[in-house]
Length: 146
Image (cartoon, rainbow, N blue to C red; front, side, top):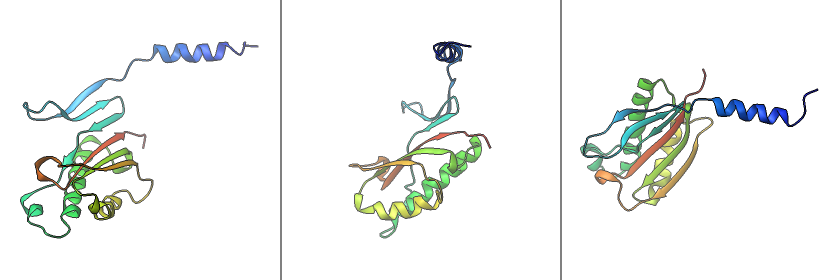
């Protein structure tokens, strides 16, 4: 019979022998911006925040936040397709709103992309998302076996 203390020691040894996950920058930003668009570490993908502001959304007097959220989510859809990911792989969302009263408008569109098993999410109001946007969204995703 194997002593009870042997099993945890073997497990620790096996964990110690594993290689650390590789880190890879997948979408670099412009040289004057000191961040990456996407960084992969092992099976985990960290996405920089995206905004969906455009000339057409700036002109909106109603439903601007909804339009920007849709632009953001569709840009993520294209990026996820390129990387072999799906919205179902998202485990964490971070939403930054310029005006907290736009929460329901943002939430309605956001929810369309996560009809079941939505990711964990943090939503905060901020003074000014970049580029005059009404909303910025960032994700963390984990590639899962399909």
